[in-house]
Image (cartoon, rainbow, N blue to C red):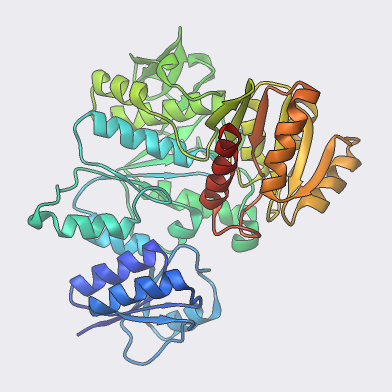
Length: 456
């Protein structure tokens, strides 16, 4: 019996271990953590015949045939480097899913920002067309959860028609075999540099996914992609919200906005005002989703239904409630400066901004300018609060308070909004969440509950 070791006990790791176990592997699943939630899940997997080791790191051992890495595990950490040097095949969870699902076509969406909304919208359009094509990867199901479901299709689960996968740079670098039918690149700005080392390395990881795609869809309004990508993919489908004249490449292969319509491959497809999400960045997400749908052969009616019925994405400019005439908006997924700048530019001024968390490297210039233009007061939380306060002082902005916690931020925002005539309270942290929360979703859920408590 071949032997595999899965590192990381999130939903990706658990699904990978279950898939391997089903396919006849002796599966080991390990995680350095050992909390009550993992202990409860451990018992379920042990009952299925999986060797689950909590509170343990990974150490390559003789007789190991395969190592599968969950997305959060650094690809260049010493134990993985050692495993590869010993000749042990080492792959990511996404690669394992690909090996089981590559009989169906894939849409793979990557980019610094915008990929979650674009992925969710593509999945909604495919669903409206009657296709079984759920979103997976960084949103929705873990990729191996889909592979498990597909493996069980003979037992009553519906077979997959397409795989719609949001794929981060972490997942790309550990998934060399993933070769999508359609590859989408939403945006490119500096991010994850502490992991990848340089901007060039980060770019090449993203580009490698597009290189392996049969068709490429690229955001023609992104300055970096506009500068670097046209010669690399001369036949790509480019998108632009600025009209046909701004389109790169052959207009008959592109998607753009004209007279309020998304024009795709030379034909009007859907009125853009059917999309209920605010902001020009969401119009760009719409165009990329329409491009994918047309390349996949979907008709205009299905595209229009999918766009019209699309509710938006939790934690990305998600309207939580209106309290005393003030909108509370959850943009917890804005984990870097560029995403947070987009969030600010999408709401009405004056706004109260809640920002902070675990800071990331990046250029904060545009974000600070958006704060100056839009924000009446910044409420700073988390580990980055002091550093953000210093940056605001450096640019001459003293309209901030350090409140430290989300509870205090929401309470203070409700108190302050009438005083500064704010129309919006926006959680758009410009930071990772790991200083206080397990992930940005948990942070967003906490904000949502605190806002709803105001109504109660």
